[in-house]
Length: 219
Image 1: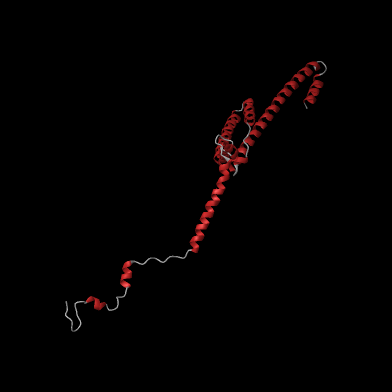
Image 2 (image 1 turned 90 degrees about the horizontal axis):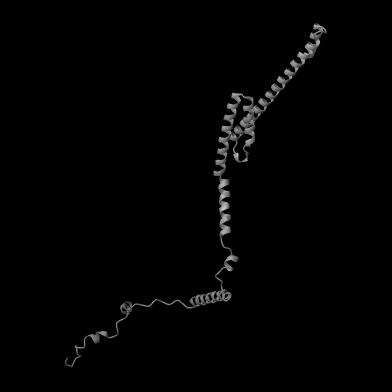
């Protein structure tokens, strides 16, 4: 379009001012192309910065609404650095303020996710398993106890089962004797035997020796 306008102007001006007109036209086109490139770069940087802002806001919203936050990965630091550098390059104060707010919001959510991960049951279970494994590694096993500084005589270990068998046999014989022996009747008290005893025959004769039969004098 500009070339067409330039050619029209050149035809109207005639051949005398054609060189001067062409020179001014080149300068105008060169300046216009430079400004066009700057504007295109500005629009691309603005679009890229807004895209990074949208992604950060979507991540923050998803982290808030997500039930299992442990599966979400935090945004890398390069994401925020690029977004902030583009806003500063553009010199747009509105974009710079928006980037600062988004970065602060995402950092707060990242800290909350880290605290939630530390206090979760899975984390406590992992820490408990770690402590158990550490305790097992510090405990003694059979090989360490056998190879320790307190050796045990093999003859003593071999004699212990024999002693246990003798004690079991003695206990078994004692139980059999108790089963074969009949139960004993409880002894009777002397007071009860005296109460149940019958008086001897003719006891009344022994009780009155002073009574003499007829024809004899009593002493």
